[in-house]
Length: 566
Image (cartoon, rainbow, N blue to C red):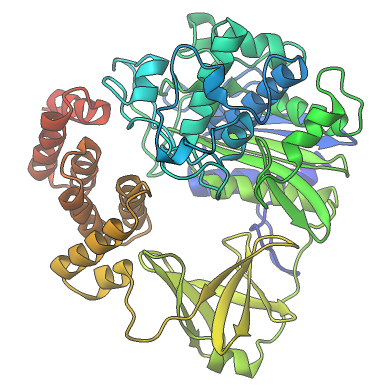
């Protein structure tokens, strides 16, 4: 069966008759140096395979003991620890965490006057807390304390963490919330976070190759992988340090992650020696329709799965497991190529005949679909999705991304090879809706726009920078609570990486106009200009970033590398 997995990689939505790829072919295709895969069957880890290089510059091979960074899979592992503290009586799920926080408190605001933030809010991303994620700290750069991260003061490279929407009213991913949880667990547990997590989770689950220590001590650093960035370059200094341990700080192996998921499965049946059935059910019961306390939730043809992905600088990981079928997989790589992970998960799912996973069968597109579905649909207040027909085929496209073909699989349902969520169309009160089928019970609907209605990203693509700046400024004034600087920064860099460099740079420049006091906006422009070969211009933008924040790590690192290259 191992051979079937290693030779059966396929897109996240694969079709009957499609050719498959070997693991090594796809590693070469993406530029993935090393990979670890661990498969769960009958709630037990049945095999663990490692292939490739832990460090491609030294030629060091991956071994079963090689440590990878788990990125955001740190969150469900940390949530497990927090729920163990609930089980022990040290924490409560639905009481104010500020009552127990001692070293630091969530700042009081209009948003928390009547609804305090609870542990349920922190673990389910429903607390209204800011800061999506964390870039980490390169070697040689000052690393902040946890309180400095929470307050957003130097040398922290992310803003302060606070509440800017009513807790419990909506879902918004927040690594900041998990960082608050880290401080809560330290204050209540009376130990450093790595020691606390070893006592609560890693030790009891026999996750012997796992640690939350940041940075790694020398004996473990010798076993750590070296990361590769999305553009194929090495992470300068090999790896970053993450003081935001609960959100992004776990070093582990695919085998240990699979042990963790298998224990959650066992706990759901009442057979874990560590976590109670009630606490396991709390982890995977929906707080938001698609998120529990620690895990993202999905339903596939009536079969329930819990999962989480991870991304740290130069590392990616994926953990997927069923609630009740006892199957699952953990995949870890030392590069930022998450699509590769999807292909491995799909190969395991097909080889082991997981419920809800199958190859799809393409069917002819109904004629009315080709004539009535095209148009622009409101994806968000910032951007649209364009649906178009071409020679009997249907496509969808975000501004700044390549088009994706919509392949009909029957019953007005369409699938894309590149993305997991399927698509359907419906009509409601005279309006055409484009809908993502999140799972069996949840759909995300997007209404078709009138031809003259242009969203900011449409203006970005169709008009001048001045008009686009006006459009974005109006958007931000109307919705000041969203983290627009980070959203626009990620979008601009995404456009550059997706083959739309001029459009991406245009958005990054607008972001700097809108947020001139953010070192990150200027740093990103410097990065893109340097990648495009504009060394002098790039250097100027990096220096502008350092004028705002003299300790901004990526700008310091880039300028040091430029100086060393002279």
